[in-house]
Length: 311
Image (cartoon, rainbow, N blue to C red; front, side, top):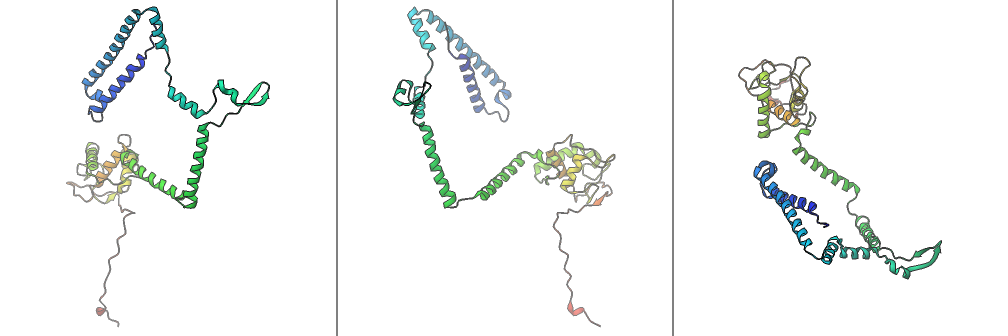
């Protein structure tokens, strides 16, 4: 018997439908449910074998029942099984949108033109083409009225709006992609979570040279205003990432730490400023002044005119 059932399509579709519903309804956090919960794996395997068993049993029953039919019944059954599906409604819509005459009625629209046995048909334009043409006319009228009569936004305004929207999207993306930061774009982190992460990195990698309180040992004191390679978040980030002075400075940590982690530990290092360590090391380098800091106005000196005398 020729079996045309699409069991090899139906089983995967049903299985993945059940799989998707399982992932949707089973709360497993960020991990897939079938990984987090072994029982889900057992359930899915059971469902897969059950679907295969149902398909095999159904096909066996179908074969047995086919053998009980008469020869004419078998022929009718096979004809019904082999009959292809026809979407009659879709075919009617297609013919209506195409607007062409069927072959048996082409004699009604044959023109007198004849060239080497080739006859010309007087077909109408396809309705879909006509409808699109009318729609384009309506669109053109609305567009002209909106932008040339009532003077809606112009290209410059549209560009500025798109740029502003893109900037917002970029800022939102940067919040979730912290590893895009570098020495030019890094900013001082003040969030408690970032500083806590920076402290963990510092205590794991930096205390051997700078001490737990930043007072310095092999490395310089991190609590004073003196810096060998410059202070501020950008300079400290660059120093941690690329390393200190050749041959005698700190190693480059960019191979071990991600940019986001370097930003965290750099921000934590700057939190030592102004603190008092137990055994501070003597200052090294120069006093660093932030060039972007606002200038402080010079103090005003008031002179008592009564105390000024002219000889």
